[in-house]
Each structure stands twice: as C-alpha cells, then as structure tokens.
Image 1: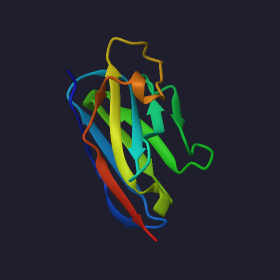
Image 2 (image 1 turned 135 degrees about the vertical axis):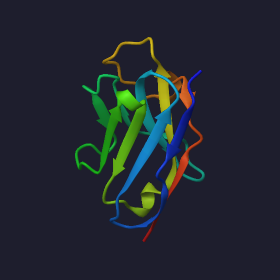
Image 3 (image 1 turned 135 degrees about the horizontal axis):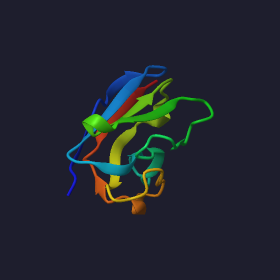
Image 4 (image 1 turned 90 degrees about the vertical axis):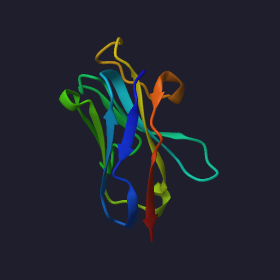
Length: 125
C-alpha cells in the first residue's frame, strides 16, 4: 500500500503560479496529476515515468503545466503557471505500484493503483 499526500494548493489570482507537491510513502512507478472541478468528471492533467524520461500534460504546448519528480524523496511536483479561473479544481496525485516498466507513463485514471485526497486550487478572476 502506498499513501499519497498532496500539498501546495490555495487561492490565487489569474496569471499567478502554484507548485503542487505530492509525498509518497514508498517507491512507485509512473505518477500523475488529475483534477476535478465541481460537476465535472476527473480529468488528466500530467503524468511522468519513473525515470522521468517521459512526460505528458494537457497543456504541454503552452508550457503552463510542468510535471517533475524526485525519486530520492518519493516526491512528485506540478508547476502551474499563468493560472486561469477554469483551472479551479481539486488536484489529485496518483501513482502506480513500483514493479512496472520505469519508462511507462499512464494517462488514464483506471491505470493507477493509488490516489491522494486532493488539494484545492482556486483561481479568481
């Protein structure tokens, strides 16, 4: 069993930045971030392989979201830049068990084994 704890959320203004963190209690393989806004389904935000050699994000072309990890600390991060009101949601950290391909990246919620409780991000206009 792996426990995930997110932190770093808060209330910010349009255009501000936030850095979300996720602390894992043990080694994992692929990790990702998802978000869920009120009345909407949970959606993929970003994911990274264990090696960090592969990453995917929903806004990669604009560079607003950047995912990274520190395996020595079993930590995952999400840098959110140029935040917009539509980014308002609860952001969840997810992880897959350690015994999986180190270059594998999961982007579907059903592919993940563990989930955190979430951290609220609210962007005011």
